[in-house]
Image (cartoon, rainbow, N blue to C red; front, side, top):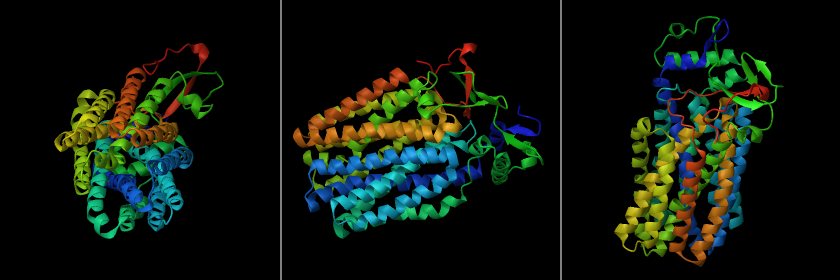
Length: 484
């Protein structure tokens, strides 16, 4: 129970349940997620065109990919910190406009340098989407059904990828890559008009002393879901408060400041992320995400080049890319069905093992049927890995640092994957597609081993935490199951 005149936010969220409000924002968040997918996947079709028209080599193409990764790193760290300090809604509305504006300008590129600058700006905006969108969406959900809704949102990524592949197949051969790039910005522009309808996160509002605004958001959610606010305890003069079970004990000095039975964390973000409480989770998610980023890029952006070197004709390349996108849907919906039984962690860890195996088989495959099987198998487990990861990451960190932690983990992972991509470009250029595939298989294997070693906290059906509570070292509080 909260203080007199207050009601626990988790209880209110549970009573509101999942209804019309949540299905409406699923489409608004989902279409924005599809728009991000379109901007990322278009590079898979843009790079082969630039190689042919601008006479770029693998190193120059790798530089374009690496610069985008660096910009995404900066975007995730910057926008994540802004979202935790100033609110999720501002970042949620701003980043999609950055993506749309610079995505359109990239179609005007006449030189590789200008294109690198424009695509880096797009990646900077996408970094904000990655840091904030899932955090904000998660904070609108009750515990029961939260995982299902997060996995449904993940399904919009392969939808955006499929749209990109079909658009490339239809537009590039007849109208060229510039028209294709402009067409890919349309979903981002359309999404920008609807994002102002999304309210601020009630969890973030309460955490920052704006309980009255948070209560109003909860009232609006209840009404849209067909409830009378008064029936849920949201009577006149009653405001929502952070639930007392949403705190996490963390061993630090005794100088913590206690408020409402909770404590305000002190110290740097790195000190929290790599503390005894969160250290293993942080290292494990970084290793997993870095490996998944790298193999995803290899499976999608490098795929046209690898198919060409495998002897696949140019026309068949689009067909293979469409099948790759379609194959991602079973990955999402398979996890949606299995997650209540298996949770988040086990499918995450296994997905990278299967991806490593598919890359090894791809390196040895010679016939189109074998190549196609590897491409589809890879896509299924890459998307299932992303579905679990995007659900797991915002659930495992508390509200006060959720967006920042998400941005930090993803940015460090992107930094590591950028180095992997440069190495992959070297292997592809120097040794050919077979050695490049073996390299990607090794990366996936390392990521899987890292996740088995460091990730131990299952978040399935667990209430979201809001505050990191700091306790005195002298209390000798035992570590929970986060500890290594």
